[in-house]
Structure formats: structure tokens, C-alpha cells
Length: 357
Ligand code: PLP
Image (cartoon, rainbow, N blue to C red):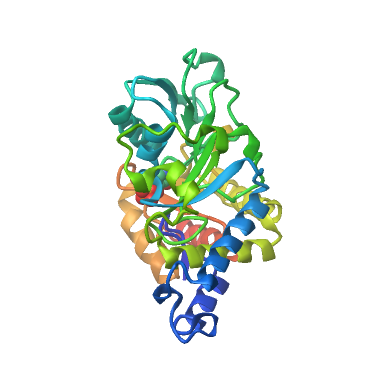
């Protein structure tokens, strides 16, 4: 089946096959990669190679640390303020949607002044983000946080905001989906379970000058400075997630890296939006300039057909299409591992369903 789930999401078939083949005997050691010590030279080599591959893929400058963290995306919602803002600091958040909102609420626990600079707005052409000229930026924010791809709402901010404070981006659902200028950011973080690997794992890319400022009460496993010093092995890391992520990075390199996958992602999204837009039966609620290329929500003209749509889609091998419980409708998540054939199959099914009703 093609899995359109927003996450945990489909991993590349090649990666899953390789993981299956070496599950009980990794690296000819006779045991699983899950069972060897994270201090074993073979695992250290894997970990270092994974970091190098990610650095190559994203062209991460040398003055950034790459951290392999615990606790998924939400873990970073609290790690960010604790690590790079003092308790009495002011921090700026752009509220792009549901995940931004969760990040804001978490930051409020650790920082006194959480200033929401702008938010999602309804326009004639659908949902959008308030124009940068209207943002109420603070004069001395410790950082500016935004979520360039709101997974639930299907809203994306395609331009990197121009602000003075270090930019922190929650890229949980769009990391590695297209080329990116990492040097424009202070921190990039992502829960792994969309474009990288298993859930519960996270990657943080942190500019070095932002290290060394953690709040005194920061829990040690969430402390960027400690994890940077310890090679992300302050405590036992999630070695199996690290291994699968390493395989995904190698797979992505074989696909031609983020430039090639970015072109494919654009083509996949364009095809699906084009089909939705020309149909009177399906609609997408987002302004064309703010549409996500990873998560494409759509509504049926008659919502009483939602269950029939989902059941018949699943029977046709198209699973995970139910929209988030907060917004309803449908959502097709088309991360890196989704081939064009999956989008073709979905469009074909949607056309057939529309014809039949
Ligand atoms: N941020 C974004 C943009 C997400 O899509 C998600 C989950 O889907 C999260 C954060 C939370 O990630 P996790 O469930 O790993 O904590």
C-alpha cells in the first residue's frame, strides 16, 4: 500500500528491505544493531557517518552542531527556550497553526515574555499567514520561532523570514524536502518520523554561538551544550532510530540529494493540487502561496461521504488519508518516501470516486 499518514510516515521501501535483511545480523556481528553498545566502534562509525551524510545533504556549515536527541518534535518545544533564552527573556513566535500553538504554550513555561508576532489569517483565497509587514517583532528577542510547514493545517511559509533575532525553525515535517540555506538559522529541529526515521527521535542543528546559555534547570538530556560535548551520547541514544535514519540519509543521497527530491516533491504536490483545483467535488482550504508540498489537506463537497472515501481508498491500497482529528476532512502526506506512483494512484482513485458518486 501507499501510506499517506502524516507520521509516523512511510519510510523508503529500499530502506525497510535493507533493515529487514540485516535485522538479526548487523555488520556481520551476528546480532542486531539494537543489541550492540552505542560505544562500540562499529556503532560510532555508523553515528559519525550519519552525521556526515546529513551535513552533506543539507550543506550544514562547520559552525553548527548536529545533535541526535530524544523526545521527538515536542521535546524540542521545551528544549529550545530552555537552551537559548533566559527565564526573563523575550522570545518571538509566529503562530502558523496548530504545531506553532503547541510550541508557544510550551515556551510560556520557561520564558516570561512569549510574544506572538503574527498568525494564520483567512483570506478570499483561503488560509494564509499574516504579512511580515504586520508582524509585531520585539526589539531584543532571544530568538524568533516559526514552523515553516504546519503538518495539520497544510500551511507552509516558503520564504525564510527576515528578522534580526536568531531564527528557530520547527522543520519536523519538511526537513530534507528541498534545498535550504542553513546559515540563515540559529536552530533547526525536527522530530524524525516524517522525512528521517522512527518517532521519538529528533535532530537539532544548532549554531555554535547559541550553546552555553542553557537555563540552570534544563534537564541534562535536553541540554544542547551537554549533548554537543558528548556526541549526542550523554545517555544511551535511540540506536535503532539512529541506524534507520542513517539508512534514510544514504537513500536520499542515492536519489540525488535534496535538489533532486525537491524537484520531485514540487511535481508531486503540483499534480495533486492541480487535480483538487480543477474538481468541484474536492477542495483545499489554503491560499495558493501558502500551500504545503508535504501535507495536502482536502475536503469532500459532501462530508457524509468521508467514511466511504476512506474505506474505499484503503481497499485500493491508499492508507492514512484521514485528516487530523482537530480539522477533519482528508489529508495526503507526501513526504520524500512517497513516489510519484503513489500520487498518481491517489489522483486516479479520487477521480474514480468522484465519478461514481
Ligand atoms: N512539529 C510538527 C510540525 C509536527 O508535525 C509534529 C508532529 O506531527 C510535532 C512538532 C510533534 O512531534 P512529536 O510527536 O515527535 O513530538
